[in-house]
Structures are given as C-alpha cells and as structure tokens.
Amino acid sequence: MNDKSRCCSCKAGCCGQERDNKQIVIDFLYLDLNVCKRCQGAETNLDKALEEVSGLLKAAGFDIAVNRINITSKEMAEKYQLVSSPTIRINGTDIDLEVKETACTECGDLCGDSVDCRVWTYEGIEYSEPPKAMIINAILSAVYNRQDTIPARKSEYRLPDNLKRFFDGLEKKA
Image (cartoon, rainbow, N blue to C red; front, top):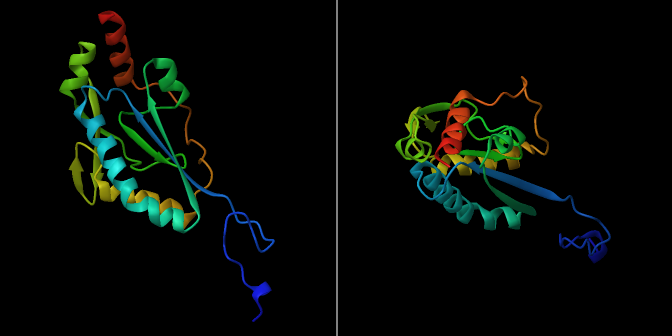
C-alpha cells in the first residue's frame, strides 16, 4: 500500500477527500437556573456527561454544539415547543419521550401558583433530575443511530396548561 492510498483523517481533507460534517446538537431548555433545583441538577448532570464524552466524540470527528435556552415567556415556550421543564434534546429528540411531572416547590414559589416540573424515568427508576448515564446514553444513541434530523411532531404543539399557569403567575407577580 502506498502513502497516497491512506488518509490521515484530518478535517481539512489533506488526502483530497472531504470528511462528513458530523454534529451533535444539544438543546437544554429550562425555566429557571437560580431557584429551581431540577433545572440546576439537569444542567450539572449535562455538564458532567459532556465532560465524559466530549473527548471521545471529538476523536470520532463529531462537533458538539450546546444551546442553553432559558424559556422566559409563553411565546418562547411555543417557539421551542417546550412540553415540560427542564428538557434536554439531542439532535431535536427529547432524551425521555415519556413526560412525567411532579410538584415543584421552587417554581411554584417563583410564579405564586402550584406548578409541576419534569421528573425523569431511567431504567425503571424515577429521578428529579436526568441522571448523567441517561444523558450519556442519549448522546451515544444519537451517534450510533446518526439522528441528523429533527423528527416530525406526531401532533400539533399546544402550550401545556402547567406552563400557562407558570407564565401567567409570573406576569401577575411582575
């Protein structure tokens, strides 16, 4: 085998071949990082998961983009089609397709009403924040399954009543 038949696999395509632009896009959508323990825990576990997998992904030629989006209004919730807070999406797919919620004291205090926030089910156990392993597995699933496009929504988005109560409460307190 001569040297011209090998490729160094650099992004510049030094052997005359362009590499695929492989990207993992992570959207972290949340209502509050100052008070809400669930949102804080989700962000912390997301950061820890990224610390563990980012070197591996970069070595495999993946770029990682993380969008941290503070949902501050009904309009933003509708724009990003938020169904519950916090939410983590990998390449447009929620890491937990089954949305469960329980009462969230912190967010209730913020808006002055009874509000539920998301809980996560991973390997049959319910958590108040997404476990690091769940996030890592979702990222690796996106890599192995090459989920490069956002799947079509099964039904038309409608702002959940829980989020309406939260934002209505914030408006009343302002």
